[in-house]
Image (cartoon, rainbow over all chains, first blue to last red; front, side, top):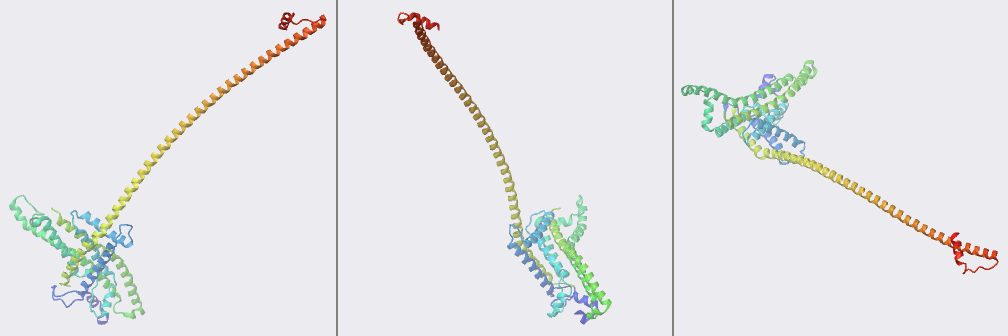
Length: 284
Length: 156
């Protein structure tokens, strides 16, 4: 345990913030580093999602569905409804994309409900010093999603509006004038405004998810730190018992509340993706 | 916290996952759902059609029953009429037959009466003759007094 090496909340939390990576990164961006834990858990959760849905899809009956098929179909139907409400173009990609994002992000977030020390402690038993189990608390995972979505936004914008249409959307609004000279003056202003809006999309998508889950995990860590470094000795003192009960009650309350957060964050990510892509499809 | 190679791995995994969902999951599940809703719609339409057919059949059956009842009534009426007629005919035949029998009997009676009267008359005449002959103490020649006797017989 972290408590054994350095019995302090700060060390405990910092220890939990570290990834299982091939080497320590230098600076903010370092492409020689890879986070094994994020890759492992996100691939594992991808397999869980894909395996479950593929299993149901391959056995899907058009008759009376079983419980599992019913639940999966309910999710698919809700996603389909949401996409139909928001997205008015015709695309074979958007709805499956939204479903994948919702389910995958939900599973990412769900890992936050696994007791914070359970898997890292198991990993330590297996010889791994660090382990972060929630992929959505890794900026690489959230940016991986949002940048892919961003590439799709650019792709669909160019495909539907053409290069000229795309550029004019970035430069000819929100301010426009009939006078050509005035319009020429407005172009840089528009471009600055619009490109900030445009670039803010992937950043906000990714940081919103990251921030929520990072904060959620941090609260679990802080609650876990209530009983840190006391060991079995805490069972003999009133303060120790208060700490245990406090951690249990607060942790339970936060976990229940967190169920809502992880669902909402997955939902928001999926819906905003659909909204951005439908904006890319539509002319203004 | 830093941006590293994980980003690209995640993007690759994500792209593959989306592709897989698009290719092997979404169409199957949505297809099954659409197929089911099509089936349900068909079933509902068939049920409605069946209901309409049932109502039509019921109407038809009612019409047939109505018609049959009408015809039965007609037949009964006709039969009653016929029976009445037959009874009337029989009554007529019987009464005429009775009249005929009565007439024949009357005739017979009349004949018998006449006959009896005749024989009585003859007997009375004979008695009268015998009585007269006894009174006269001589025989009356029947032949000579035939006229007289006949007159007498006619008077009786």
